[in-house]
Length: 120
Image 1 (cartoon, rainbow, N blue to C red):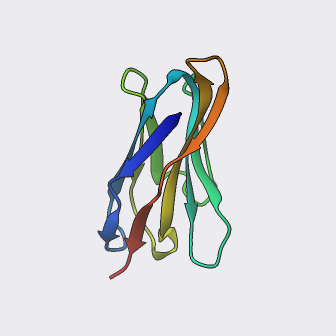
Image 2 (cartoon, rainbow, N blue to C red):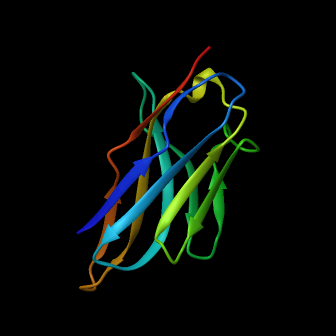
């Protein structure tokens, strides 16, 4: 079982910055990719950013140039630096990870989510 725990959400004014952090633990052999998703009230969950084991990154158009995803491979963590935040970035942000467990099976795990509110 692989567990993901997010932290770093909160209330910030428009134009401000926040850094989200996600730590993976459990029976991890290898994490192939980690990602951040978000879900605003009344909307579907959407992909925000992804980073693979080769450091390939991909971003939603709405966050390009403002958000940066990064990984610490030794610690099995992923972070999301969010700058120039807008009210439309308000959502619950979820961490996601996929890879191989120590028993050779694949896994795909979600964190519990962390609230980000951008408001003046």
